[in-house]
Each structure stands twice: as structure tokens, then as C-alpha cells.
Image (tube, rainbow, N blue to C red):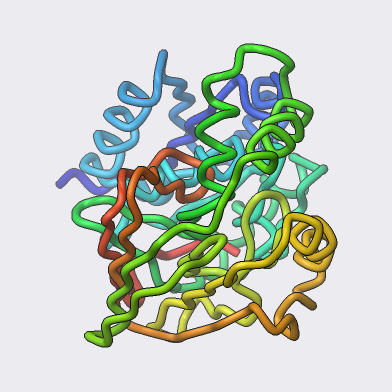
Length: 297
């Protein structure tokens, strides 16, 4: 490996945040270079090329991989650096930015976010946290495997409208016909069969722009937080939804919470999403990988 102290890679999703990614990148790039850093400025034509570029930078020994985008871009970067000594830097430019929330990073000021990267590199201030892993794939935030995943699937098939309204329409459309799902779970070897509205597996506490579905999840405890929302009426689901933003849904009688090292989630016809990205069809087995990620914070 060719060590390149002082060189970092900046990789951008220019379409994140409804096109904000490119503008945020320009501001951050100027700030990073003004601080004296040598920066590789990269953007793949698609996710596959972007991941190849990120992995090549890690192989070359860059000091940090800095991603400019939303949680999807963080997800991509993590696939390249999980389990390595390369640190992750984050310039938020998405709509949700849950990972940035985890580390209290500036979400609306790219210059300030770039300064955090510079300061972290100068001081060596790196936080080591866990990741969740299924096979060779990792995630940072939450894996959704129920009603929320079905909404994502519908929204991804829609071409209109764009932005958050597409997800609102998809939610209303699915809510009309949604019925509780039949799950089979393995929680650290304990088998469970049950019906539920959703099962969420959290490495961190929130997803979807601050929905604290796995409230109480810690990034460095070596455990995954599994939340089960048991059957409730459609009206009850709608009433409970706003409570997710504050994490107060934990007192609901249909809420169930487990902390495990490994979980297998199975339900027919469901495709799981993690970090807001399509993750894979159930069944999926997820394990916690302690200390797998180093983040400039």
C-alpha cells in the first residue's frame, strides 16, 4: 500500500438533496484545499463506478474518504472502508442526513462540515463505532423490513411526483391495503413467529430524516436494536407516526424492543431497505460488527 499522508478523497453524489450535492461539494472542496489538504475530487457516473473509485482510494492509502451526499452516499462509502483504518468524513447534502445527526455534524453549512473534517484530521479526533453487516454488505443506520420497506418499493417504482411527496403518496396508497405481515425471527438463537406491522433492525437510533424508530440504540455497544411494531389499526398507525420523531412511541403497547448480537428476519415478499437503500429480499441475517468504522467527528 502506498501511504499518502495528507491526501484525502472527496466523492460526491451530485444529485443528492435534489441536486444540492454538486453545489455543496464546490463549497466543501474549496474549504478543504484552502486548509492545505490534497484532495482527489471524484464523482462516479453511477453507484457502481462510485464504489469502485472509493475502493481504489482506500487501496491507495488515502488518509480519509469524505463523502458528500446523504445517507445513501454514506452507505456507499462504508462499503469501501468498513474494517479498514481509513477514516470517514461526511459533508451532508441529502434530504435525511441521519448519519450526520448521529455525529452532530452541521447539516446546512458545508463550509462548517468541511472544517470538522479538517479539524478531525489535524487533531486525530476519530470516533470508532459499530456497523451492522449482512454477508459482505454493511449499514450504519436502520434496516427497515415491513410497512416502511413496502412504501420504499412503491415509491421507487413511481416516476411522479419527485421528492418527499412521492413517498407521501406511496404511504397513502399502501396504507389502504396493508395487512400485518407474518414474520419468523431469530434473536440470538431464540426463535419467534409473530405478526407485525414492521420489524426494524437498528445500528443507530433513526432513519428517514429523524424517525427514531430504534430509539435508544447506541453506535458503540456491540449490539443491534430490534424493534417490532405489533398489529394495530390503520388509524392507530397514523396517530403513532408523529411520535417517531421524538422516540415517544416506545411507550405504545404494540411496541417491542430487543438487543441482540445477531438477528435473522424473514417474511414473505418483503425487500429490506437499509440506510435508505435497497438492501435485499428477506430472509436477511444481520450481525453487529463492533468497532468497524472510524468517523471524523
